[in-house]
Image 1 (cartoon, rainbow, N blue to C red):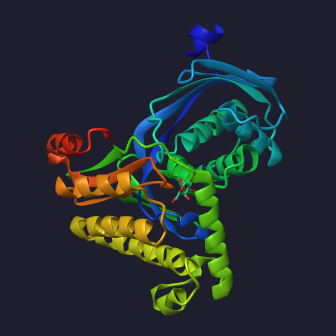
Image 2: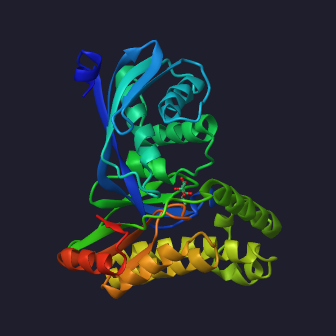
Image 3: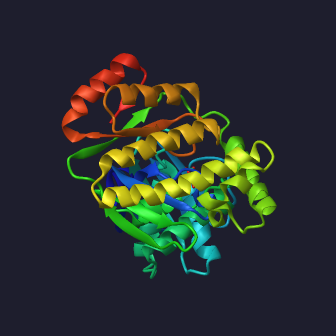
Length: 347
Ligand code: GLA
């Protein structure tokens, strides 16, 4: 607690959740569609104003401090200092903060613990400095912090899911217009996270390579972004040189899967939504090549134990998968998965 550590009451308290993405992977930096849902796990920031950026992170058992205006140092405080930096860059009048950070977001690859921290910090700063920021502006500033200060070239999905997502609903987001719609999760079903236990390997370089391949494919197709290519254009996409043809095919079919998946959920066809999740995984594995054997195995284990759909979630290269199951099956599903894949964490 802030009080125990710093000896006074914090002026504000804010929090923000991690997320799991149900459908629409590697589409956000192609101006496409995504469909994430916030996790029940949050990151909390208790804060007071300060002339510096200083924070204690309970997870790391560590206090760190930095002057306003100092650059990134490759540590966890970058995510806090980056938010202050992004707000100041945007011309907002903010000083520093003294923060106490706690988090229940599992430190598992693919659940956006960094976006949860950024959004919670910006929400705390919004209250501390009385800033008129809405959910979309909070997400954009959080992304700016991550891209320009921390130096990770992410899209907008994670920060939007954390900032504009609501419990029990999934966020249908058009990452070009940033228009979004909340879609209720089907009743009687449960979204389950399956951690493969394999840390992400070479995720950043793989991610940046994929982004570059997509940009090149869009250039060759003469469009602004792959979002502008549809299923009817697949023959032209498939005529691109390897591997751009398969990278672009993933993005085109994935965007179509998001649109179809939402229609399926709206008419109550959960089965079809699940099939689209499995198809998304196959596309990420074969066309986009961001899966690993352990995630492929986990998805098959989930299928064997009755998941309606399952796929890797987040950037891939390790980390977690997501499954959709009947809520009443949870205990049976969990023990079945753990028997076949003992290294998993199921929650
Ligand atoms: C990471 C990025 C997101 C998105 C996903 C892949 O989570 O932060 O912006 O690109 O990978 O869908």
